[in-house]
Every structure is written in C-alpha cells, then in structure tokens.
Amino acid sequence: MQSSWAYAAFVLPLITLSAGLGLANGPASSASTASGISNMARYIGGSLAVAAVATVYNSVAVDQVRAGASASDALAAGLSRASLLLAICSAAGIALALLMARHYQVRATAVDRVAAAASATSHTIPTPRVEA
Image 1 (spheres, rainbow, N blue to C red):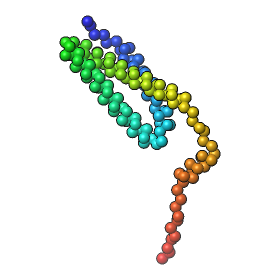
Image 2 (image 1 turned 90 degrees about the vertical axis):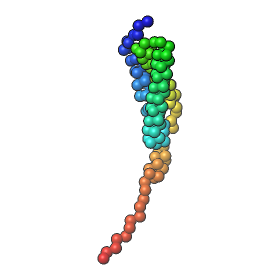
Image 3 (image 1 turned 180 degrees about the horizontal axis):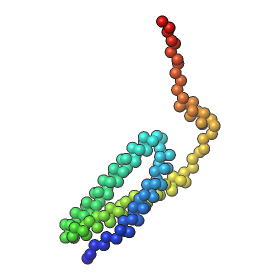
Image 4 (image 1 turned 45 degrees about the vertical axis):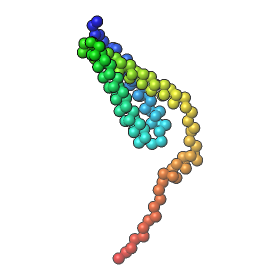
C-alpha cells in the first residue's frame, strides 16, 4: 500500500479549525466577566489542544511503526488522526458559537449604564496645600 500525500486532505480540517476558533472566540470573550479570564481560558485550552493532538499523533505513529508500517505510512496515519481530532474540536467550537448566538442578552437600560458609570468612577478628596 502506497501513502497518499494529498494536500487537500489536510486543508478541510484546518479551515474548519479556523472557522471554529473564529466563531467561538467572539462569543466567549463577550460572555466572560473579564478579558483576563477569557485570555487564560484561551491559553489553557490551546495548550490542552496541542497536548491532545500531539498525544494522538504520537500514539498512532508509534502503533503503526510497531505494526510494521513504514515511516511515511506511520506519519500519514498519525497526521490523519490528529487532523480528525482537530476537526472534532472545531465542530464543537462551531456548535458552541451557534448556541451562544441563540442566547438572549438583555439590553442595558439607562439606569444600568448610570450605575455602571458610577461604580467605575473613583473620587478622591483633595489634600489641602500648606503654604510655607
């Protein structure tokens, strides 16, 4: 059996991944209470995704080599399984974005805006000057 290195086989999962990330990041940022929480979640999620994809790739490639496959066949099998995992994660991101888009957000009223502005404003008492 000969390995096939069709570039198109890897483009679709990458497009799906980028669409999922693009659609999920906006609602996730707006739904989080602070941008720090959103950034932390994005970095941790990215780290866990890289670890999961590397684990899947390595375990499949090692199993293929142990089964007697050539190095190129093992590489192709590992990349295909890692791409499948990325496509599944992307589909989950798209589903999350669609669910968040259906979420009804209450519009802020004038009272809400005034209360937010009042709580964000800090007042300081001026220190009296002493003339010498």
